Image (tube, rainbow over all chains, first blue to last red; front, side):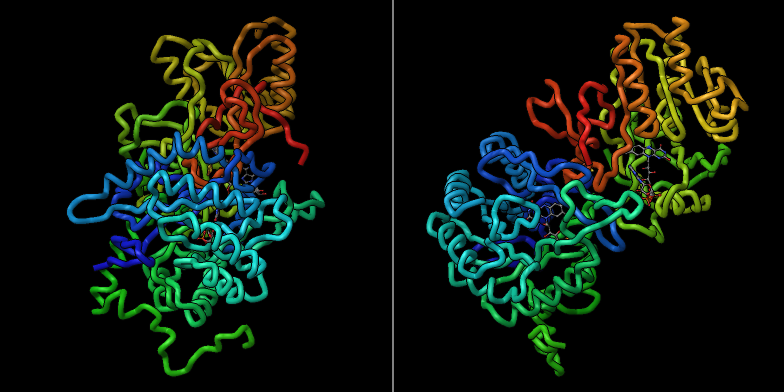
Amino acid sequence: MLETSLASLELDNPVLSASGTFGSGWEGRQFSDLGHVGALVSKTVTLLPRPGNPPPRIWETPSGMLNSIGLENKGVDYFVRETLPKMRELAASGRKDGRHGPRIVINIGGESIDDFVALAERFCREGVHALEVNLSCPNVQEGKLLFSTDPRLAEQAVRAVKKVADVPVFAKLSPNVTDIVAIAKGAEQGGADGLTAINTLIGMAIDWRKRKTILGRGIGGLSGPAIKPVALRMVYQLAAAVRLPIIGVGGVRSADDVLDFVCAGAAAVQVGTAMFTDPALMVCIVDEIRDKLAAAGTTIGDLRGAAHRQAHQPSGSCAR
Amino acid sequence: MQTKVHKLLRRRDLGGGSYALEVEGPIPSTQPGQFYMLRTERCWPVQLPRPFSLYDRAPDGSWGSFLVKPVGEGTRALCDQQPGEGIVCTGPLGQPFPRDFADPVCIAGGVGLAPFLLLARQAKAQGRTLRLLFGGRTREMLSGIDDFAGLVRMHASTDDGSFGFRGRVTALLDDMLQKGEVKAGEIVFCCGPDPMMEAVAALCEPRGLRCFLSLETYMACGYGVCNGCTVRVQGPRFKGWPFSRTCMEGPVYEACELVHDAH
Ligand SMILES: Cc1cc2nc3c(=O)[nH]c(=O)nc-3n(C[C@H](O)[C@H](O)[C@H](O)COP(=O)(O)OP(=O)(O)OC[C@H]3O[C@@H](n4cnc5c(N)ncnc54)[C@H](O)[C@@H]3O)c2cc1C
Ligand SMILES: Cc1cc2nc3c(=O)[nH]c(=O)nc-3n(C[C@H](O)[C@H](O)[C@H](O)COP(=O)(O)O)c2cc1C
Ligand code: FES
């Protein structure tokens, strides 16, 4: 009863892991039966190995945290050899009793269009279920103009990936822009099959006693409950403006949070930072959603976008 | 590895502001140096759980304890728990102290004492009595020292000389090195504040003692998924990769594996 679909990708339920916050899923397999989550989204994979940013890389803030991991990963060859088989094993473990099991979504990060294309080709050959294009790499120094900050660049990246991909392609958007709808329209033009919103908000922490920034890189991405209102607002705006399915992400830690996103128009939801607090959370949320919907006598389908149908329409623009 | 709510059985005051939080089992079999991520079940005032070494464990796992010193919101909330309340424990996590050395010299500062109780018990069960150098500012600050009575050969140090050697634990180590009580070729296991561990490593390495440090790095997940706890490393164990996750390959590193960052 929680089945949902993202373009042509059918999911057992709308609860996914967020990229970079649950590894490949393998590290957390002992804490719960991951066969019951909708999809496992990999940490961003890049073509070449990336050592990442200097430590310290994380700092807790009120109701959230900052991170500047810098997309540390050992590159696509290592990933395909060592990590993907483990994701396949997890996926297979859930493929029974008429269920699809967790879908494998690979988040790819490129420093050029060519990088994105090479990664997409490689992963489609490997038979993954979907690609998530990380347009927003707020921690990465190289890419001077981010794909996520320019509608034309977003469109080009997505179009190039779509050209070679035979699986659904989701564009992951950054909130660090003046108008996220403009970027989303670029991705839609490029042929995206869905949008993931949002990545982290750029922030900073300073220790005045040491007279310096706390993170080694200086800046970092803010995540956790602190950003949920921002993410909800953006998902709401996107749902009103584009026709693509939206994967909501930002500060989710309960079934209530998931259903809030569904009301804003999300077709599925990712759980990120909250997995650090409770490594079994995703599976608990899936069960909890079932109970809450039953208790309220409603369904995901009924709730989807419900906030857009309320009597007093919230302003879709940024003006209050 | 598991994540479970454990009932707090007792909060034992260890003096010096630290407590032993004794929780109901089952506590999985845990090697000295491994840790758990802890948070209170209710009213956890922060987001992320906090890492703590397992301090003690019943041989049958029916209870376990953590040595906690309140230094911030999370540790304070844990120490404010009343018996009967729940503590969520995830673990055991990380790699223990290496098991190939029979008679390491153990050096602890402050709450860095925590991993050594299990190590001392393990050694004792095999008929060995470890040497433990334990330093604090005053006698009162040697929280937990009484739990080691009869288990180790204790060499305590206090800055004010109120108990044992007068001076830092590093000065005590230096003294023992000079007297030949600790010698080249020996193995050192150390856990404490960063400056202390750096000083211990600086004393040991030029004198030909291998030194293993248990780091207290800031962590988010504790189980390897965030890549937030990394330290800069070198050496064959890391196959050329410049970073290591303290919660997975650590928290114990050989001193020569660690590369110090400028920040
Ligand atoms: C593997 C491991 C084992 C540990 N074992 C024990 C133990 O057995 N007993 C014990 O009492 N403590 C132990 N610690 C330390 C303990 O985890 C921290 O004291 C705790 O996380 C502080 O949380 P808080 O919310 O109380 O303080 P916070 O509010 O998070 O911090 C209080 C102050 O301490 C600083 N701080 C906090 N954590 C760290 C850190 N890891 N590194 C550098 N600075 C930090 C903060 O900058 C802040 O100034 C261990 C840490 C690790 C990584
Ligand atoms: C430690 C950490 C690492 C992350 N790494 C990635 C990443 O590699 N790729 C990516 O697209 N997003 C990454 N993100 C962003 C999350 O996927 C998510 O968009 C964001 O954290 C908001 O969700 P949350 O509040 O539930 O964490 C990371 C977030 C965190 C906290
Ligand atoms: S604390 Fe998350 S990877 Fe180590």
